[in-house]
Image (cartoon, rainbow, N blue to C red):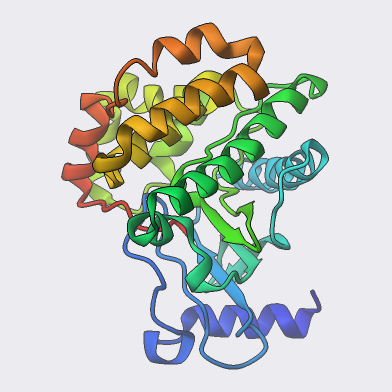
Length: 282
């Protein structure tokens, strides 16, 4: 991206909501992404994160994000064109992700809410195939790497699942370092204030993302909460899927698929504290 384009991007971020575009999802954990209604970025979703005073930490974040995008693609995860910038805005370097926009009507979560049983099972299969593809390839990366394939982080395009959540970059960071990132980049002042008092629990939020069976079980749990009338069908699908596509992890996954999986109590408490809703994290 040229200096002119970066200047235009910075001006867009500074602009009021009417100019830059209203957020296209409700408040997420890290930011509220927006898509400009017109101009050179009208085909992009822009995600703006909190700046940090630690320049070295920001530089490392940029390197890790680049490595994570490359690793996801190498593993075979379908990902829109995604570029990370450290943008100078009013004297502060701010992390900004510019991502190719996906059609709003392709977002998996609302499709899961309205689809028939068979349609939602097809979407689960598409998402499951991406989860299995990632984990079956993850051994090639000689570093700590994770994946957060929740329903709200997928779109369904031409019957295929496309993943679009690359922040925080789940690569290279230790468990404790990732726990600190979850606090540092939370958009909620309450979380940044309360979080250090509950650091152990905040750090635990990430554990599912670094576990192959737990990512699949988490996807199924979300589907069961969205469409409880189809919960048994989703559980049946998942039990068969893990045996055929993720056999290395079937014992642990099957143990979590005896009944509709539930969110950990501490995570539901955080969601209430932050006022988070389960909307697409575009």
